[in-house]
Length: 226
Image (tube, rainbow, N blue to C red; front, top):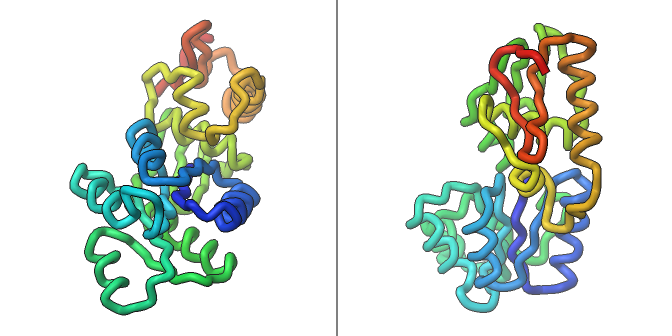
């Protein structure tokens, strides 16, 4: 899952990013409102952690713009404002949760997990052939049997299933599953695809996962020759 952190305090931003990455989330960081606008325009996120007091536009104005534009990503707002009226303003503007500073990272991570679970419950299971992926429980079955996947394998499979039958470019895949620090020259995508093929297609001549040379990858809804 991919999370956008919008925080101008360097020390806090560093702790947030490190904690989220340790929990195996892909994380993008914006240090001011303008950078956050650019990232939100270019990407879809599973969650946004948004500080109210950032260089213009501030967090509340950003949130107002996103909701007006129909963006429905869950937003956890961070702020030093402790007045009930401020909390009401944040929630009424569209924040899904609100955390006042100072806070413990344990509490923040618990709220992140809660928001992501809540969002996942609204997502339907993804299916293709004998594969069923349930976003809410992060469970994958193949021919009725549980399939053990690493977080990155899960992320890649989830995105390919969401675009089943369509060719997904390598760039699009890495932008969705990895963060902005991903090394484009790395062969990690090839490694993940190799592992997924081994787990899903095995020694079968008819495949679900295909590489379109020079273009990207596609997950067929029915098995076809590779």
